[in-house]
Length: 147
Length: 251
Length: 230
Image (cartoon, rainbow over all chains, first blue to last red; front, side, top):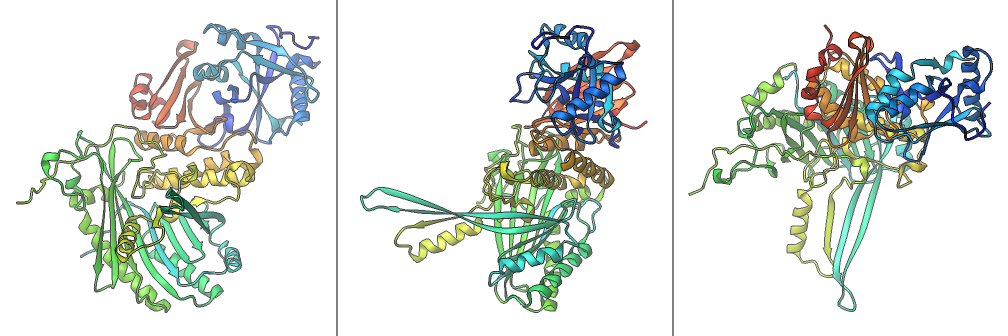
């Protein structure tokens, strides 16, 4: 188990909450994936909030379900929202390729014990965020599919 | 003059407005909202602001300027797609249609329906002014660096050729039409085009009667129909065949 | 002798017109009443003290020159002077109402069915039940750029739509793994990314620029693959 402030290992995974407006859809509103805006920082944010999947025990499926429930403990996850899952190494590789070293740090809070932060994320890199959306957060779970 | 029916009429907004002599009670307007919900699911408060500037000289010979902003609050009722609007201010009842324009029968039919409903609820209200306004926007393709707007429009500023091509203009003309006892106000201007590679020109015509306004429904409707005929004539006179060709075809 | 023009024509301005144009004396289709402009230009200048008949006539004539706001351009009223005390439902309604009115300005250039479905997508994006409170609803300036692109490109394949945190509209076209994503910014600017997988590896090209250059910028990357039905 990591301590608060420690970086996640490359083999670990992170989960990001993505609201309806940031889900990539086709013209009939069928969900296909994520928009780059799902991974952009808000003006008031310093780091990107994610969950550390390996905080939870059990197999991958169980970790995913528990992580979703942990998100829900902290805020109102909307019905049509989804969660994206990515490998830590792959997230770092996207930015290292353009000379940026992001850090993914375990940063639990009272309302989310699995919380982690992606730090040193650039603010205005549309193409890199599109790569995150396309090639890195490749696993998607719909909120409605997790009991 | 034969009225043309265009496949792509350049109308961006059509308005029939009735302005009352006296203010409608705010409570009565709120009651109206419930009645109009069946036709207009949305109700949005809107405001119409006017600014008064008073200039003068004060006691110690200092120049003073006092400003006063007056606002009128009204209700804008609308359909879900925001193309059919009804706006009620304390002293006015305005039915508006945004593009795509469905044709006169549909638009006027809606006006009659809403007017009759208002009258049923409020009773007789003396009318001080009645007007029909059509805002058209002519979009001319920019096939060349200089757009020959004179080949499409018949209303534009007349300036000596030596000035060269215009980069902006806005004109207003007012004419009194004796037979209708109405004022015709035409505003025409070059406006920023909302689409790429086009130059856009507004022809905004407002036909208004503000004296001897009919008070009975049949007379009101008859006047509006006559105004409509004149409005069509004015529009056809304001554009050329080249412009008409733009409106006739599906895009 | 009067110099009569035979017509010297009109030069469309090269300057990008933002939706904040305030130097208009007639209705500008893309003027934005919700951005704090006084829409009625009823300005009465009263000389304090004496106003003689001549001044009064002049003032009335000047007042008559103003163009009254049309119903579509009226500004939504709120007791609050900013959006923060409006309910979420009110904010979302105002935003979608404004862009629907904006769409009407180019409705004569859009297919009716396309427009109706677009409105359904906009309503879906602004569903109060799905709305994140920290997000901004669709910004008119972004939507104006989107309309310019759509009216020019006329895609037969409808894009999926999304929003950034700041209310800029995103449009996505997807063909298998290949993707075209465009973000519509204010002042007729766009940024876009093409992601393709020739021979299985990601090939990505990105750009940013004027919406008028979008089609030309995309042309080397076979945009017809996404935008038009075969």
